[in-house]
Length: 138
Ligand SMILES: [Zn+2]
Ligand SMILES: [Zn+2]
Figure 1 (tube, helix red, strand yellow):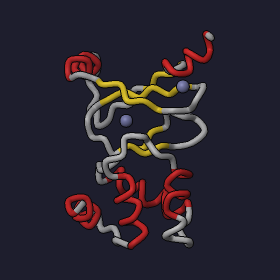
Figure 2 (cartoon, helix red, strand yellow):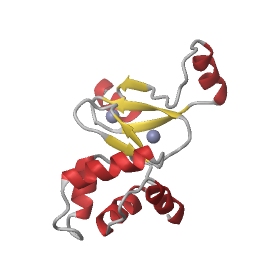
Figure 3 (spheres, helix red, strand yellow):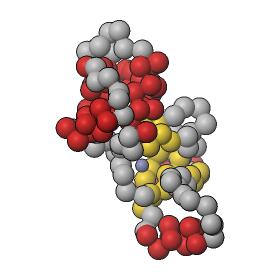
């Protein structure tokens, strides 16, 4: 948490209690909360919190490489604090987003084919998750 706060300060960001609350909420999360979800979870404690604050804060967190902003779901953005390289699987039936591990070899193979500098890799997969598949075939 302290490291994250100093990373934000290095960027010249003002540290407000709402920003801290968003950072705290996202840290360690593995369920890829959306902006809507962050808003719902914080509005009890911060009745004046706005989507504008959530978006500007998550932009700052992404610039400081503390989170990734996922566009796997074309209806809303999701936030992911997991720094490990991994792909995302979006179930188009239940809307859940799953992590799919990516090993270094796979990442290396992708990078082999480009001369460009790559700062970020996003891999999105779509379909029906095992749970939904069960329901669909029954
Ligand atoms: Zn599903
Ligand atoms: Zn993830």
